[in-house]
Picture 1: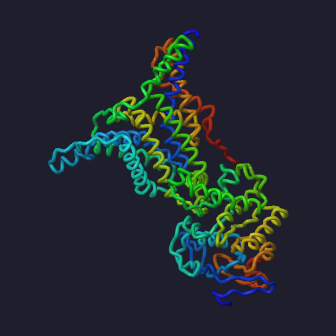
Picture 2 (picture 1 turned 180 degrees about the vertical axis):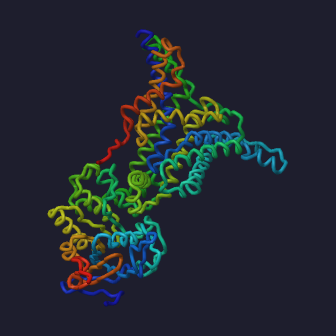
Picture 3 (picture 1 turned 90 degrees about the horizontal axis):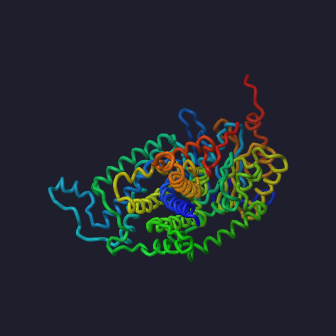
Length: 335
Length: 272
């Protein structure tokens, strides 16, 4: 196999892996948008909040310690214990569910029936509020997230070595693929399959699809809209946690993490705002597209750094020719 | 009138049960407009009760009050012998009152079978985690409910379109699917908002047959709104007539047909 081709394939695979991470963020948007018509600008901040909470719990940090110290003149920062990561993840899930309930109870319950733009603005407010709470709760310094901090590194270290070796034997060129990316892909696959099965075959999943389709009809068959909305915000919170773990492990838990929401926008424009498969395929296309474009055209001819804008340009092209996205519901106005 | 707690037999031999729902002095306002003015009537177990009246008479508003979509400013709703506190529509549905809509409210993206299955939601009890794991009780429940849904699909003769997404169906069939979904809830009272609106003669006959069959086979109490006087008179045991938000007649089809107020409302009357 010629080296150039093998190299292209490697770039393609790495693009797929990056795409999975974009898809994870986009998924959270789709869940909420489908069920309630709210475009949740705060999804990125939710990922940040989830990751910070996870790290904070893992390290035994005292929440709101700065506030407590300022008021009572104490000097506490840590409980002095480390929490096992599985337990820490479970606790973070509980926090995200509580957050979902509060968002529904104190914000969106009062905005039922409002214009989409008002709901959107509420989520912008929510984003900044949540960012502030995250800062106040856990502090603003950059933290490293190691999912297995307490137990030593538990990611399967051998896999990428094995891939390198096998592909070298087969093609004469060893592929390098990041361990974390492989794990992220597997987790994302399990998450998506789980979500689809949940939506398709369970009572709550059916009720969720009912609400996504028609509010009035859902009420008439005995579905509580409030409950379903808390449920989808919880699911979106859970997806945000997974995305936060993956991105946080990759680039550290810091406030720029919330900007991944912006990366999800072109993914949504490609895949459509209402389609779970669309979010996945859109994420993969963007991931592969920007890596290949950079490798084949950007770096040799355009001076590089095309990854920063390629996704948005692709989304723009889509907006012109297929505004509903690849899988979105076509908007047909009857005259 | 007859005693509310007693059953009675009609002239053509139908047994009508005791009162299951009673509306007492219902008044509903939208801003300054009184959509319903001080209306009282009851619904008895096992009967087909029609609400008729010209356009804008407040029939649909009345149905929305019964199903909890509107909350009346005054008056009481009594259900199964107890006063009903103010309720959300989904709570009313959970109490055993199912409904269809004038403009069809189906889940367009789902198949016919899935739509009918949503009608079973109020009968599924297993919790979120049992459902998520789909084990034991949840699995049994799913199978039982599926059987009931299939039975109703058979009954309404829509087997051929079980797996078709609802969005692709013609109007008449959508109306029937909506009936199937409401029926799947095995409701105590079934509310039908103009089940035959916009249908041709043949479809109307089909629908009338289904309404009668449902009442016959499952003993379901049915309250329906209809424009077509002929259909109403053939179907119903008792009729409430509304005009401009007021009740102008209540009784058997024959009694209502000969009521002077009703004739005036429908044919118009000269004011001199």
